[in-house]
Length: 248
Image (cartoon, rainbow, N blue to C red; front, side, top):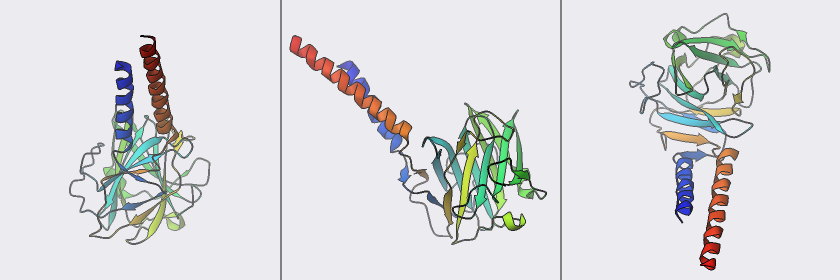
């Protein structure tokens, strides 16, 4: 009976973890306004630092691999990304539904407590090209590695300076973005994880998030696999207990 309740507790905790945030069933989200007076570029995403945090799954496995924290103050976008692993992190911007080809990409890695971050132009599923024009705001970027997770924080102007590949984010518009990361490599190579092609609506002042934490398509195969395993264990233990009681 003790084993049965342990299994039941595990399942309860699992569902608690699964339902701890609002689940967004599409691939779209929102970027909310904030004066960003709590923002601190220290390589750590702190509680209340950003208007929203979004858990984002890998497009192949459905498992959550990164948390995106962000907000805007009408002139700049403040971004924090925490990813499992210690490799590079890439944040791409393009028109809605368009991928790496022609995308503007910020790629960062952390080594020895120091961040290496640059702006690139995507050319498809090959190594992106380093942009000849870098954003001055990236000089304030920071990063850290804690408990096997890498975190980067940086600021981008709402309007880019990369010509035809540049982002131009305006209040009321919907733009496309994606995130990619590597488990261990700080050098740019084929990613371990990649999000779906996502979209974001840039909200004006006065619009507030329904929840500070969101999850995009959080019904991952891993989560449901764990649920099925727990249910199987519970059923097996229950049958054994019933058979034991019958024998006695």
